[in-house]
Length: 142
Image 1 (cartoon, one colour):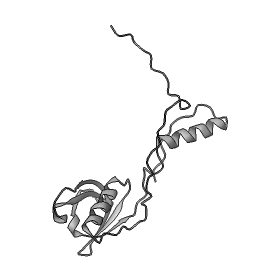
Image 2: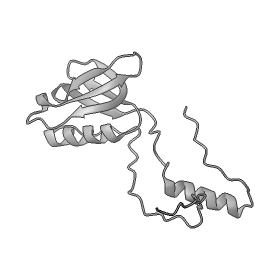
Image 3: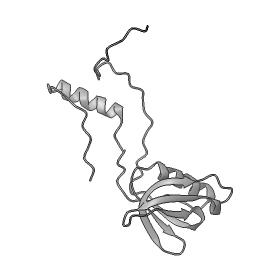
């Protein structure tokens, strides 16, 4: 019978951290989407972005919202689409890549700067300042 072990409390001082990847700050950017490759690349970044984006269609209509899904493996742009939750209504909207004239990263990226590595750094700063009972607390969203 395996021996039971007691769970140890988390110790930020001895935690292993690995370097993260550089998080590209996309907020406010308007990527070039002149070629098929640029459109595909920009929409992959938009899918990974944790904020709202604004899409202007070729017919001039615009939609702002959070991209939650995409079909990007089509042979042509007409075979690919993003799906988003619009900011101003409660539904899901699909937009074909081929209908997109402009893309803008308009919302705040809620995941920017929120890594374990950042938390450990803040923890060590608070501990060095003499704080006790340091807790992980979620940051308030706007």
